[in-house]
Image (cartoon, rainbow, N blue to C red):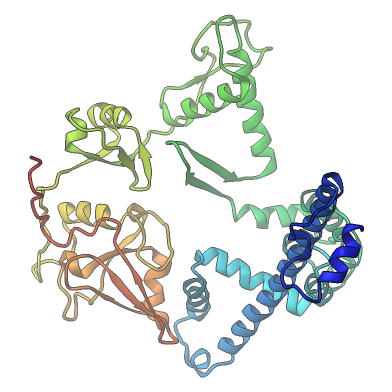
Length: 449
């Protein structure tokens, strides 16, 4: 009896996936049938994920409409209602605010402007990634261009993998877009940025959203520099050399890059050769190093900017020699000056250092902006009943500082832990804990026997 005939007889009487039954079959047939059934299941799961994604977009846009039509929106005079709405979704879904903002924009585009795309996503005819590409590429198109763009890309979305589809969709967008490319480029250039993302094993990623001409110029420069170092005795790959050239150029103020082959004929076996002096960037990084690690009596890793672990040997070298680092040595018995009461509004340097170590980032829900780029906010205003104390101060970036004017409330725990409780305009509460909750003066730890 064939596998499909057997499962057809049993499927009405047994629950579960029939292809998982342990039946006596020819091993080769069983393996083939089982594999086919698993692939069918994976396709069903993929279609279900697409339907769920479509429903998520609809719900997000429904919530946006609900809030924008609410009495709270009509009463708002702060100009921050949109920011408060974005923060509400970000907090509820545990998303970064920028991700929540993007989600709302895509949901609005799919519901209002691309209903056919949303409907086909709900039918599972392509993935959420395909729908996101269509929404993103259509954002700056006018109504007629958007309709033409959607008509051309939808058939491709149903038969192309997402990576190839994205390239094709971008090409089609450029062809149907009537606006001047120079104007669009200038507008897009306003959104240039550099992103640092710490990774595993003491490594991380540096990403830059830059004009294409700058990107290719940078890549050509470091590629030429890397190739010039591929001489006898050099065992680094070109990829590794390009990375090392970039590090030298951006962190060593006196870094020198090789000239192109037409500029000089000089070649040296190691190091960077002379011709071009770059405008190097002097590093300034906060590093937290346990005192026992500095003394070589412990192997506790150090932390760069509080989020990126570094090995003990590197931590010792940086703490000992780097003039561009703020050194913070910690010890179980080390205390800190925590309060200046009502005597002064400005936060003294020693308390700033304590707060930066305690918080590390902006203390709004999900915000990862580093504390060094944030304001220090009095939770209870100093011109009211607030004091300049560690349990009434916290780092907030400029944007989240302003959310307090848009209906968000905040209180700080009185136990010195630095825990903040945020109350949204809808009355929901979210806690954000300090990275290093000292809780006042640290208590001595028991001695090791």
